[in-house]
Image (tube, rainbow, N blue to C red):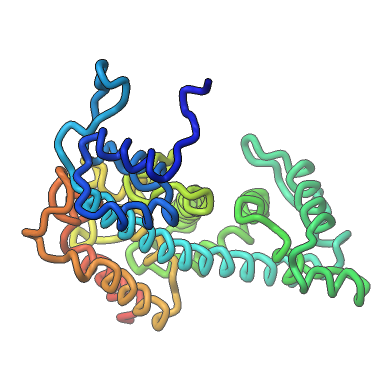
Length: 333
């Protein structure tokens, strides 16, 4: 027998009660288990509440009694944030693909043998230019999902860069950017990072790479069903360059050193705001964030042992004002 045997929904309900989770309505819990899964709603957020192993019962139990409604509420908030962040990360991904394809086509031409000649690129660190270009070619060749790629493959004499990028993963495009010539990277990073506080090209390129790498990691987490907040990611925004690019109204040095804005949820929120150059979309981004968290904005409303919504998500309680300050930096001139 496996130590994780199959449990019916009724057995899962009993397990939930054994874990010190208070259930007010059995039918409600059973319905949620059919849609959000036991693992996703119980194990996914247990560390927020704290657990211990009960030797007598041979299972993990919550350190303090928690209602199922609390777990369900946090799961809904997380799912909403997942969907929102994914939507805007996809926008940045498409923007990078568009900018890179435009410059590559302008500089090298539209034929694959022109713009996918590895000699026109430079190996960077662990990235070998020949391997990366081969990977790009393989993804284009094997792609069966992009209608535009299929159309150009069947009806035209080449697949130009603005079409081929549709066949590529976000991480592949990031690596394509990394092995590109410095003038290409400078043009793209300058186009993304229209920050009046950051004018040095090298600093812009460094911030841009760390920013899109952070977004890619969060995108992969979301795509694989992992939770958004308190997520374990490795890419971190550079303290000196990040703080130089914004002002103290957005993020202070002491806050960064405490973990806020390094590689957490607020860091992702910041990066999305910094890289979004469409003012209408930027305002929509602020509106969407407000809509997701509006019902929980009362600072006296405790939703977990960590405190209110802001303490639970580990974001500043005035995060919308801070993100809006980025708008003032970018679009005031």
